[in-house]
Amino acid sequence: MTKKVLFFMMMMLLVVTTTACSDDEPNGNSFTSEEKSALKSLSGTWVCDDALSSTITFSPYSAPKEVAGAGALSSIKLTFHGTYSYSYTYGGIKVTNSYYFVVKPGSKKIEAYGVASDGGYSVDTKNYTYKVSSSELVLDDGTAKTFTKK
Image (tube, rainbow, N blue to C red; front, side, top):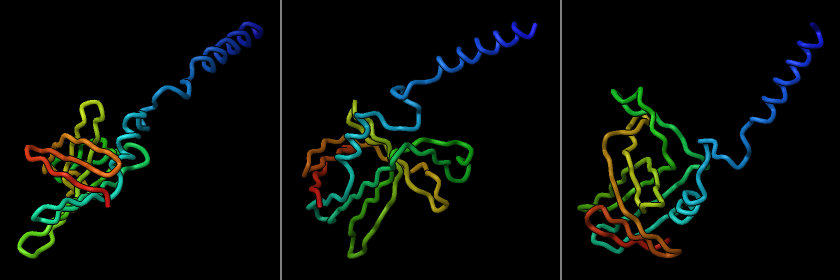
């Protein structure tokens, strides 16, 4: 009987050790190579030579991060790739808004949710298509704006 139990335990150990995830499988807590490339390209501060002196600064996370919503959305978590701040000057007053964002390299889209005062995401959303090179970023939410790398 002891030999059967020992044999069974050895077989279970063999099954468990050979069915573990390999390192090349995505684990859900890392970026794809396309996302990494897009985030690297977007990272940093970009300025627009428009009437509002617009500036956008992308700050990607090192890995995707779950964030709970603000207020009534607190039980709903969304995964984001980083934050960005968008600043402009209107009537001599500088305005800065902060957003969580997700980049979708395949469709060249950025989806963003405002950062609420409690740190959660808000329903203030932005959707852009983007085109980026080493020195130029074009964001289009219906009206295209061209930014240059600072």
